[in-house]
Length: 183
Image (cartoon, rainbow, N blue to C red):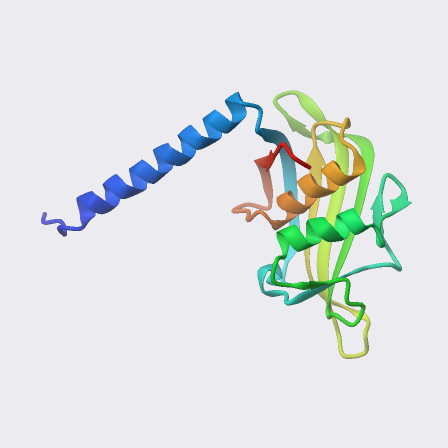
């Protein structure tokens, strides 16, 4: 069997990238520059391509809540949304893409990883409004289960948002979320 002249250089380049990234992550972890979180994710529905959203508003009627407090007008939440959606206009109430999130400390024994139960539950969804302004049934929605309960509200939001935006191959998936140490 004959292989293209580009096959071996391509394999070598991919291997070099993999090992470079692995070494980078190991170095960052060794120096305490990366925070690591194990999250169990349940992707209930994925009908909105959230990466293509050019704007994003927060659901002020139902929820933008962390630990039972409203965060829909919190400037640090808006900053985090700008970080994750750099090309989108954030906070425009006329935007057809609406983010709803709820984060609570709650033990969930049905969501476990290596014998540890979930200590925090997070629900994130982005839905499109229909022409009347009501939220349509077209949504992307995940429930997320974190094995820790010692996070502050903004850190929990950041972990949840990154897990929400991370792609999944299966309806249920355990993922490791890596974030820089600066919050």
